[in-house]
Image 1 (cartoon, rainbow, N blue to C red):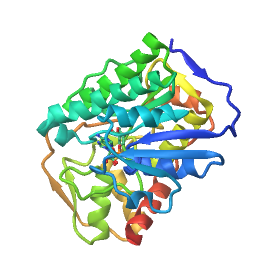
Image 2 (cartoon, rainbow, N blue to C red; image 1 turned 180 degrees about the vertical axis):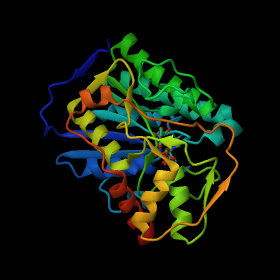
Image 3 (cartoon, rainbow, N blue to C red; image 1 turned 45 degrees about the horizontal axis):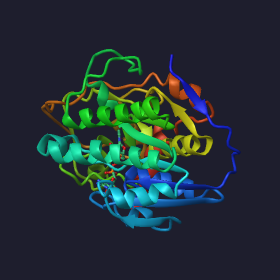
Image 4 (cartoon, rainbow, N blue to C red; image 1 turned 120 degrees about the vertical axis):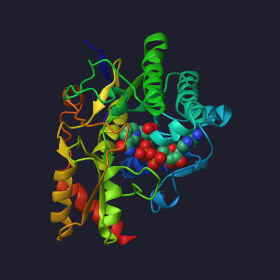
Amino acid sequence: MSRVTTASFPADRPLAVLVTGGAGFIGSSLCRQLSARPATRVVVLDDFSTGTRENLDGVDVTVVEGSVLDRELLGGLVAEADAVVHLAAIASVQDSLDRPREVHDVNVTGTVNVLEAARAGGGVHTVVASSSSVYGSSDALPKHEGMRPRTESPYGATKLAAETYALTWQRSYGLPVLAFRFFNVFGPRQHGGTAYPAVVPAFLERAVAGQPVIVYGTGEQSRDFTYVESVGAIIADAVVRGVTSDEPVDLGFGVRVSLLELLAVMEEVLGHPLDVTFEPARTGDILHSQAAGERLAQLFPGIEDLPLREGLRSTVDWMRSR
Ligand SMILES: NC(=O)c1ccc[n+]([C@@H]2O[C@H](COP(=O)([O-])OP(=O)(O)OC[C@H]3O[C@@H](n4cnc5c(N)ncnc54)[C@H](O)[C@@H]3O)[C@@H](O)[C@H]2O)c1
């Protein structure tokens, strides 16, 4: 049985929130939501390795350029915060295969640095980003937090280590923490132009450019796609209410969509058929992923995900506006 607490904070309490990795895809969306809240001051710490200043255009935040590996800088910023949302990481499976030590340093040592800064700051509420990749490709569906993790990449191992450290800091030192395992987040400001892009921007960028969409494998592999603003809404609510849990929480809504179904919805949204090319499956690709989402629903009963079609429409609008 997991232990969950919600501090009895008033919903409109003034808040100072530090978002590490706040210039990235998920971070910049969260910063938009947090900074729109009354009496909320948002500080971003980002080294701009993948994040951009453009992602935060028009958002009322203070941006500090630096790394979570700079303990002095981090300590000073955390000491002034009521809550930390720790998203900074090298969030690429391929980078972790190519440069496992560096990814360990940023993702694991960086997390320990954040936790230690939060402890030194008198017990600052800390939300940590983990990943559904901790489950690996076991056939059992849906995934749930009671399953034994089985990581299949150094990236997955760093995320499991990061969440384990966070939960251990709660059990050992009483630090108020919440560790979310994100499931396939998509939406505006996610870029496909990398060597191993996430599937939604990979498909959409080619489709919008009139190029054939490449599917690796049969297309029957499936994902629990989560719209980025739903992720931001849940994190913001967790921060405002001071939600903690001594077990990880899957952040996925339990809707499983195959890549072939995803392409069909994309065709509807774009208003034309897509030219699709099939290539052999890539080794290491996880076949199916879906969250049970029960713990999430218990902790955040009022928050639902945007339907896939609407999330894709907003993403396409953003891509076309660039
Ligand atoms: N996008 C997803 O579907 C997904 C799924 C599971 C988990 N996550 C986790 O969510 C978090 C955010 O991911 P994202 O998709 O927004 O990726 P992202 O690459 O857009 O964001 C990561 C941010 O961290 C910054 N960063 C990297 N190293 C840093 C360092 N040493 N110091 C300070 N900043 C640093 C980057 O510049 C970037 O702005 C990551 O922890 C990732 O592992 C994402």
